[in-house]
Amino acid sequence: MARIIDGEHRNMIGDRVRQLRMERGLSQQKLSDRLEVLAIYICRGSISRIEDRQRTVTDIELYGLAQVLGVSIEALFELPGEGR
Image (cartoon, rainbow, N blue to C red; front, side, top):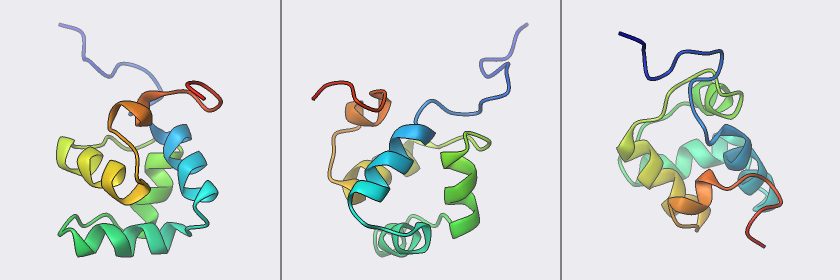
């Protein structure tokens, strides 16, 4: 049986997370800190791996990222430049 994630990328949202984070003037550490306030613990290194699409993202992490970045969950799946 084939794996759901069967390529070099481990998530679909990394590029968009990076774009939104930078648009909001947040460092990876600041994003991590704001997630921690929501009791979602993703260290700065893991934020980097998410943005590089080397790490999977759980549903709770997806929710937290959307909350902190001020977008809908669906907006995290838009490609940079789409939907504007």
